[in-house]
Length: 611
Ligand code: SAT
Ligand code: MN
Image (tube, rainbow, N blue to C red):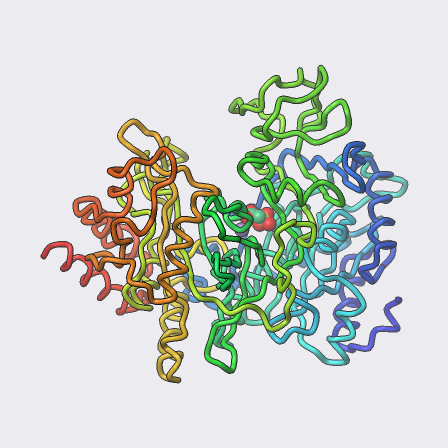
């Protein structure tokens, strides 16, 4: 398709303006076909950026520049009209000033390159929960990743019609080519101080410059599906959340869906694809990272996974930690910053086996002796710790049959969780919707070894696991969650709201050993949640919420009855410290925007703990 065939006048004008500004050598409108994917892969292999993997059909390895290996949070901006709307947890630049700076960077930035126009749908094409974006990018690597992670192509333009709404997304790697110049195997990007990942919430625009990696460049994911979508959700009365969606079936064949939020590195993808150890139970995957939820006519909250692929962290993934992920990446997968073995396969730390052969190529392209075991050596990693796989969701052996249902799946429970070596019980049901919002708002992980400038034992709070992904003031975001509950209650659907839980798979004993085995054994806590949702009398009311009644969760092998009791009890002294930490360090940052319902909740828990 060429530009003149575009039926959407606004879109055509937007592209034409971008062409005049960025001056690419050519423009291609992506149709999302397999032929297009193959052609892009050829471009990438020919330019020396992609390596075909002998061991995995239709799979490729990329090595990025060492300066371009992860999301750059300190170069990520929420450029709302006022700084107060971005809130204390986001970086803010005045939108007029930021657009000026970035327009200067965009001038001529695509010289010598092709401008790809990528129309994509977040969510099944045509679903009324889905949204459309159009990304302009000068990276073929972005095109192939977007093909996997989103629904790309002509069918999206059909839904857009002549005047439909789309989120315009600019992306440039910021590395124009001179005459005759090519990338020659070197990952193109701009230096850190020129990188910008910018969001303009009022005008629903995304402008990204200088990075080709992950969430900085695949703009459907965190930029659109979370930061911009969270603003749309606030304005339109729905929820855009950093949550996996799982389907769970009990031994009698009855089904529930749960949406779960965890900060990074707490095993979200693993939980989404968990293999239950509890006999007769089944877990299937609807999504592993993002959930968009709207109320249905029946008053229940329906969720879709806006993505169509997994962009998962590779190191640590193995047949024990996540068998289904390993199965999902056997073919048709893009790997980034993994090691390359002599027999043409990828390798990473904790993949479950040592590397075959004598030598291995690390993620920086250096030859090293092949590691005999899969243990990580800090600073000497073969794969970068944020190495990733991009794999089609449909390749997951336990993908739920309804994962692309345009109306979504009805959510029965929300789970929040983090890495908390002490205090927080295995599983705890909130007493009310607002108490659940309180739980979400204090989510966080404990720093175990001293990291960055935080002392060991400090809790790094990541409310709702949304801290880097909320496109507006977090205090207003808490209020939005409270309002969702109030609205359902006002409409007589309060009883249909999902129940809210807090879980913790990471409790440790005094010798620093995990008390709970995690992984497949987490199905025991999920089964308890399932039964709570059915109103089963399996809990005891406590000061902090409803905890499992003794005997309702059978301890897995290796967990003593005493340990189980500890996991399911209230640590009064620990909780008093928790409350003090929230009161003194966490909540004050939200200032006047902290909803009074949350400070009241804090007072109420404290009072119960003291009585
Ligand atoms: O790079 S992504 O933003 O897609 C993944 C992540 O950092 O969570
Ligand atoms: Mn994520």
